[in-house]
Amino acid sequence: MTTTAPAIHRGLAGVVVDTTEISTVVQETNSLTYRGYPVQDLAARRSFEEVAHLLWYGELPDAAQLHDFRARERALRPLDRTTLELLARLPETCHPMDVLRTAVSFFGAEDPTEDDGSPAANRAKSLTLLAKLPTVVAADQRRRRGLTPIPPDPSLGYAENFFHMCFGSVPDPDVVRCFEISLVLYAEHSFNASTFTARVVTSTLSDLYSAVTAAIGALKGPLHGGANEAVMHMLLEIEDPQRAETWLDEALASKRKIMGFGHRVYKNGDSRVPLMQAALDRLVARSADPEATRLATLLAALRHTMITRKGIHPNLDYPAGLAYHLMGFDTPTFTPIFVMSRITGWTAHITEQLTHNALIRPLAAYAGPARRAVPGPA
Ligand code: ACO
Image (cartoon, rainbow, N blue to C red; front, side):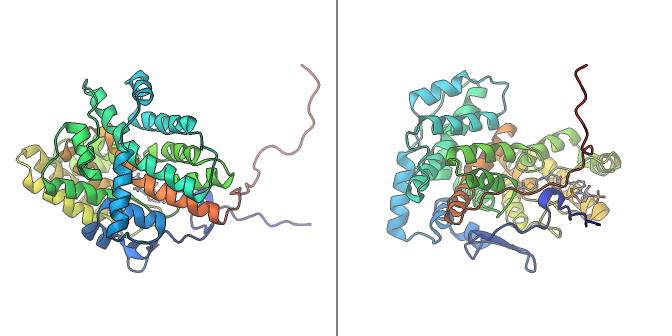
């Protein structure tokens, strides 16, 4: 009897594993929608808090709902003494993503309702994480700079408060707006690797903190969220825009992956890039530092050469990395900022997974040794 070899979908490329009502990429129009709204319009017209509400509850908030949502988020921002002590104990050699992963795991260990997976309990946990993660990220960046944490300011919006906790001041509204645009664009992207990780963990009926901790681990890698940091390292390595072409040729010849380029879903350009690129251009234009223009020129040269040579387009991490650099954030803080935003998408998916849960457990085609007898003891 002959058996047909099963089709292998390495990396689950092209496999549709479930339905979702949260977001979709429309290939024909190269656009991304959250709950039906084009992300570009959301980023241009709505705050990050409104988008978080949309992802979690399915609708944009009205004025009263937004007021309530903001009040609850602001009240949850401070960290207690035990958490601050824990963060201070972590070695400075560990990556800030390790700090975030540890913090979320610790929040889970401290929460007596950790195992209550009801929608109401999960929404409360999601809001707590949304509120506290920026406080962790800011305190960690300051610690690495030898500075003490700055407590959150409940009179400030989500984005403004983050700048305040990092630097002790809030930049002008243009810069805050560019940052907020990046948060909206990063918030959600269907079944990407980290979201799928969160759904896999959730599908076993494990708790929300475990799912988010695992998702942070998945996002950390340079093929996913870690690419925004890797782009910055690449720019600093090349340094001179004149070297862009030769550097790229050598890198491609040695089969090196160019960070910030390519995407599993978008093959003709990431729909989020034009808006983020425009935000970056505004940051460069308002900067008096010639370094900003030099790095932006280098970024443009690499992009041009990569599209010409390989037909591979930049993804969101490409403009976002330099934008965060120009805003004053340390490079290792870039991916944690991605977490501060994507926590909204992850937790929306965790809730959705539980509404129609099926254990996620694919098959594998066995490629090891044929069945054999265990030899006697040596
Ligand atoms: N640099 C060089 N070559 C590339 C790149 C790149 N960045 N991206 C794709 N390619 C090439 C591959 O080498 C491959 O060529 P081949 O067919 O000759 O072997 C071809 O394009 C297809 O690439 P795959 O890696 O098979 O595509 P896949 O869909 O699996 O990968 C990925 C997508 C992982 C994002 C890839 O493009 C990559 O590694 N990019 C760099 C990392 C990065 O920027 N990640 C951020 C993703 S977006 C986000 O997380 C917000």
